[in-house]
Length: 77
Image (cartoon, rainbow, N blue to C red; front, side, top):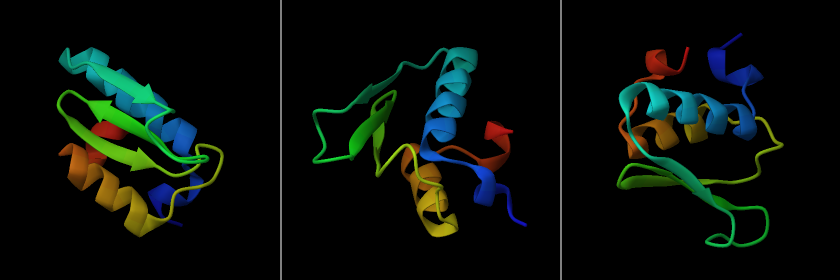
């Protein structure tokens, strides 16, 4: 079982928010910047799109979001 199988979009947002507080980086989420259930997560000046915060993240999506935010997977543990 991989680490991402159990992580939902809302958990990802919480972990990124905690990481931002730890590293003194501003984190915010804008729901009106996306269509439907999509929203934009800003981590400092970098951003990524969150599809649906209630759904589990697929491995490729999770890795792509980390790459866009320039966050290491181990930082979220």
